[in-house]
Image (cartoon, rainbow, N blue to C red):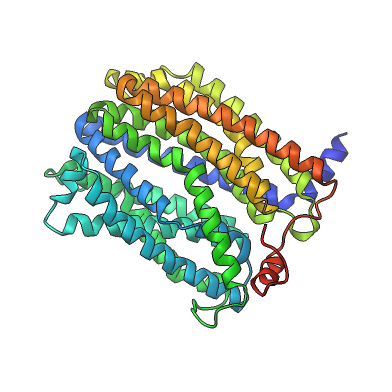
Length: 441
């Protein structure tokens, strides 16, 4: 039995290595982020921290919307070191930059909570320009990580997280007193943004060729369609992660938003672990002769087990939140177990959604992502205005449970249609589709 498990693990060495590295990266991000906001909570007022977390949430939201499906497209179709891979990645970076710039402008023009108003008024046009810079750099950092993952340079992904986390603390010590909330978000987001721009510039040393925009591969039309379809699915399946904090910041006071962000940050780390395992599965699914079905089983066991453990820890240790952050953050301790418990059904949803993407099953992808988004955001829009943070927590947990049921049904249905891994679609199939030889599922 032990020998069989060891043999299976060796067969999925890259998947396990990638997953472990990304989980470790998540741990570094969690530790540095928690320490940063803990120091801010101890040094600054809860209102300033609430405004700062609202702005930081806004940066993440715009970076997410501006991704235009490129992280998924790069993972599947720009994973190598050929000229086509470099061209597709370069255009992905250009598309991400333009989309983030547009999304940042629309966000500042449409939303008007007090934190955003404070940013818009910061030194005239400097505030909005800085917001756009932070959003673009953050989005590029996500794209950079995906490119490094496809090169199996997991150590560089971890190193970037360590450098970004460490760079915040010297900036936090700078004695800026006026517009403290805006300065806090600059400190929180600037290292990530700089690492995005700098990492993209450094990337040719890893991939062995410079960024280039020509010639366009013959597969480009198929890749564009794939990225747009997956952008739509990403907007739906990750929308709750980024939209729930925005719904909260619009409907609650700055003090309550600060409490929510503390709990949400901890829960987001737990939720990131299945997502990281799914990202590794997306990059490694079916590669080098590995069987996707057994990779999926392994991912479910690892992700589900870790999330059960995280929920137990969050429930038992909830009182540590007030001991560390103070009694002003009691609400964070109250909603933390519910938010972390949502990561258990999310583990199933994340892995089975990745399986559907690797197999390019558009129907299953749309069904899972739509169920997740509607089941969380619909109740949240109804509950948060009247019930505040409790409404957000229950909407998040209930919606994740519903989406997990849909993902299991989609997985079982797809499994009944095939007994092999032969339906894993390769990038070559997309190239064939671009010239009319095969349908893009």
